[in-house]
Length: 87
Image (cartoon, rainbow, N blue to C red):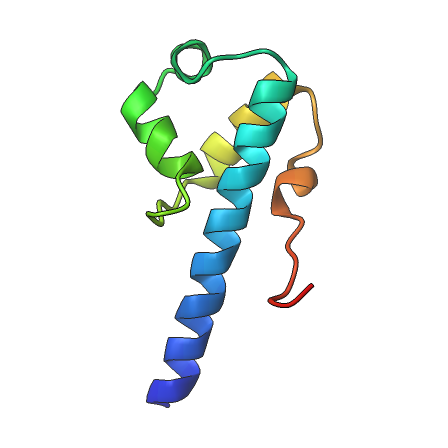
């Protein structure tokens, strides 16, 4: 069971990283700086930076995911579009 769990954890890490990339992409597309966006979400800019970072995995709550999507004017599912390794 150890290998299966390790594989699932790696897969989840990739998903969090991809989600962070989507958040950063749509944030920039909408003209927000990290500071402005974080302030509108009532979170710290440092926390947002960790969410968007590719070097650190930072899980977020569904509530925050929905707030981010609402602020960006997109469907939350757009932030959850994942590519498999090698695509």
